[in-house]
Amino acid sequence: MVVWAAMAGFVAGVLVRALAAGFEVDPVDTRAEARRAARGLLRRPKLGVPTIELATAAVFALLTWRMEAAYLPALLYAATAGAALSVIDWRTRRLPDVITLPSYPVLALLLLPTGRLPEALLGGLALFVLYGVLWFVRPTAMGLGDVKLAGLIGMVACSVSWNAWIAAALAGQLLGALYAIALLVTKKAEKSTEFPFGPFMIVGALCLAW
Image (tube, rainbow, N blue to C red; front, side, top):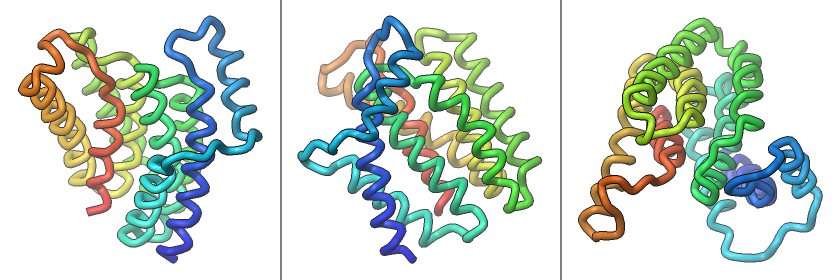
């Protein structure tokens, strides 16, 4: 099962690369951008170093190895959406609503078989509010896209357990802080320098598998 999951993850990574390529830093029309990104899924994949594909394959394999079968549909969807959002945010400093917002009902449906949908919804709301407060206090430190992403992470993590929720919430902040410190130490950035926070939130969420 783990091997098959890794193969499926590699294919998902190919699709993630194609989808992410259609998003821009500052699009004039977000709807046209979304349609263009969707059409990219039908194009022939470009050859290159398969970093996205291998990373997605590794995440699929990890989740399949560590998590119960009832959680896998939701977790593998979240992994695919998370990979796409990570790539897009790193390239464009954006977390498109066209991916984050539909993911709420999709995850809710996929989490139904786990029997923990109420906990997932509560966890999603809690992390959404927490990040919303952080954004309100210091809007230059993160964007509204990060707040919307936090709700998704809270849903997935809390469907596993509240301990997983706490770990995922803290891990994203810790990884982002370590990256910021590294930039300051190497003098590649200043205190006011902004960087995409979404990828660190998403990578931190993987601690739920441990």
